[in-house]
Length: 278
Image (cartoon, rainbow, N blue to C red; front, side):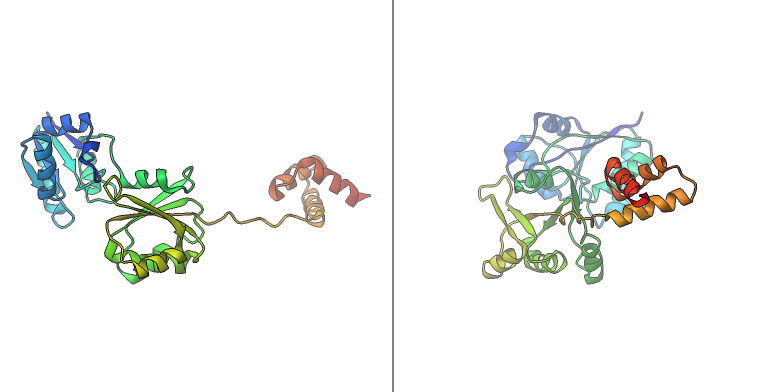
């Protein structure tokens, strides 16, 4: 009988954020697949657990993934953890989940800490619609293409960034979205020196040019403002109604379709059509 893969989120800073269920899952797993076994060992020691650890990270995932799947199919239960936060989110764990799904292995995610959602919730930016963009590529062409694809993005955008790359990323974001675009920079989340800086991209560049950044950052960037549609004129509405009637539509149907196309009230379009015929 095949085992299971559990995705176990780990604290992003404060070890007190580990949940009872996450601890129980780690305790009951046959083995733990960890991004960095040294980091995970510290957590296990904190919890008073002794478990078998195997490394699973970006540069060994192809080989180790197959081995992990074999063990689960043989009946073992694996708990996958990253260094911090939810595994498989901007993390090589997504490949292991894909492999397990393809092999018919049940994958269960334990809810818990996630830096992206934690930062979004305290950012002060719109939270109704958002997109997670992770880390930007270090390759200039890919980085430029990624940002160009987001120029008209109206949802709030979430990025991760390391301190030594922050300034270059802020400069690229300011160039792509403009210096006046609002941004919330969330640093050292859940830790002693947690900080949220709510400013604009241009001001953020100035701030971190003068003060070298420290700690891991989550960047919450406001989406592009909605594009205002140019209001249709009476002439446009009248012409469209006449064109549709010429195609065989009744006045009622022509008015209805014109109102829908031009985003105008039907009664307004009807009055315009009558005036045009008078």
